[in-house]
Image (cartoon, rainbow, N blue to C red; front, side, top):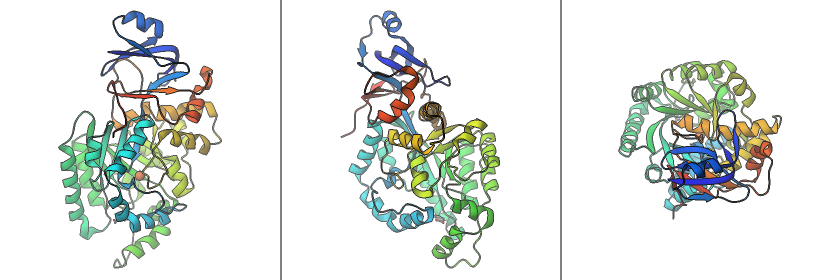
Length: 414
Ligand code: BEZ
Ligand code: FE2
């Protein structure tokens, strides 16, 4: 058992309760949370570690959407427009993949760990990140991605997906959960969607998908026109008539009975958000990626009004300059410039803790009795009034002082 105490403790419950001069007693799970005096008195035999002036304890962060297999990218890819980006991904995919070796994965995992990420959701397109995720200090929901629009390759792609899924299942544990990601409605053949989701449904998996990331996707799915029409003509010139594979509505309907995370949703309609909510789904917000590829910002106001939950993801280094979650939160704070600073900051912190853990199916994200002891310690740079903490935390934090996962302190991997 351990006791940590700090000047502040963010419970990260819906009330956004902040305790002052607080302590937490834990082993693998959280045993008790309360005032420093109370906890020290109650657990007399347990050694207490006070984290110092302006210290703060909170649940570890959850990055619900990352593509580690792109971690070697810095300047290969083109930003500013979704299809420009997609074209550059196709061009540089092999180079990026080859350059992403052990050191590159380690750096990516360490960057997340140092920023306080204790849980992440990895979208694996090829199974290349598998061993790194299995051995990561963090807890991982490992999404094996299925993708491919052309009917003649459906069987090959499905078998490849099944092999990757099977391989990942060999390593299933409390901290490594194998699952499925359906790439998107514009890129995935309905047969692949149906067959992969049958597995997800029968095995009660949490599934991830990209949905309505670009204006071009909206135009293509609704009217069969626009940049995607040009893209498909260029990449599949042998097809005489090019049509969208799925309508947005049919695509969403295929997730009935599956707990689903809808990533981006920048151009989703209110009706589509309602469908996501009815499905028991949630949205993943990747603000930096959205700015770089689509010049767009998720309608958080609408989500909050509809009480549709969202979490936060960095996306991969294919559409971001870092995997540091505090950079992501800072970007969100500035991108949603019309929102009240204090309530937005609280909402973003809850999205990266409580909502993220719930989205990925882990029993942490809130500092309360019975939850897994996934905890970070942070140092604020100066004295801070309690009602101002949420935005100061986002503005000033780059790396955490300590991170505990299942009660054990974790250090960067070497
Ligand atoms: C495909 O593999 O069929 C595909 C990939 C990306 C975008 C669209 C289609
Ligand atoms: Fe993504």
